[in-house]
Image (tube, rainbow, N blue to C red; front, side, top):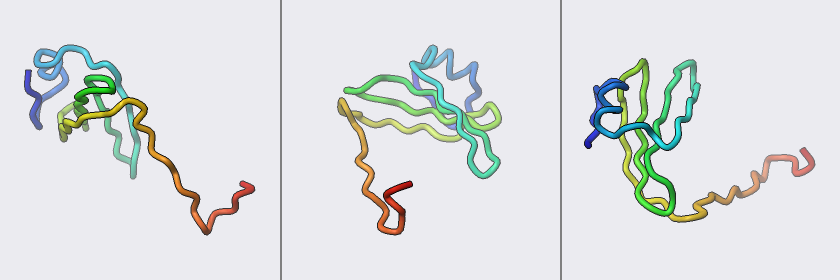
Length: 80
C-alpha cells in the first residue's frame, strides 16, 4: 500500500489501485503526470511520474474548500 520513488505505473496500481484523478503538466519541456489519491477534506497523496517512473510522492491533509486567494500584482494592469 506504499508508493516509493522508482516504481512504475503498474507497481503503483498494484500498491494503491486506480487514482481518484490524474493531471498532466508540461513545464520547461518536461512532461509529468500526477496521480491523486483522496479527496478533501482528508488525506491526499500526490504521486508524480516522469517517463513512466515515480519521481516524487507527497502526502498532505487537505481541508474542504482549500482555495488559494490570489493577491493582485501591483505591476499588472487591472483592466486586462
